[in-house]
Image (cartoon, rainbow, N blue to C red):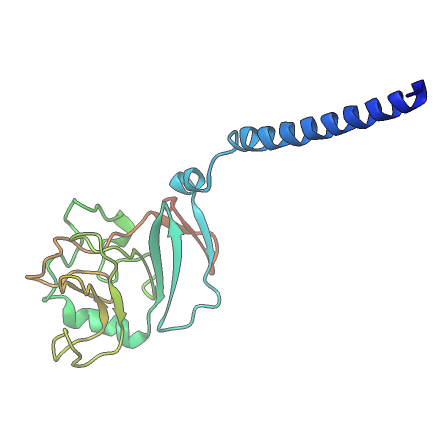
Length: 197
């Protein structure tokens, strides 16, 4: 072998070794660098969530995630708001005075919200952490009373909640649905996770 062929072969092996080293270095560096940024879970643990509710029509529900929990935003109809007068005497804690799930002061009212037509509640049953289902249609239905005015049913153990998330008397759930801290940034922009100023 003469000198130019040896140099050519050596350069090829050096280039291959450098390429392999670079690929290995990048493969090692990517997860290391990625570990410096907070995970999605960590970001969700404390960050407030901004929601546009301009497209939410009366009788509809929107679900967003805050701190790993489903938060329901329901735009109630005038009929649904009227039904709260009917359920007032049937719920266990009509004024949200219980402290297991403290209700913000601005939601300690019949409709449990800042604006009467918009309910903001965590969609987790206060009994064993199941997620209730919507039962907005009034009237007799399976697992519901004949005079049902609309609200939520937890199918796991039969707890029922009115359209304000107030638990009915003599049900397994000990408390109303939680109302998270929230405030309005504008008529149609809601911030969940920070209290009203």
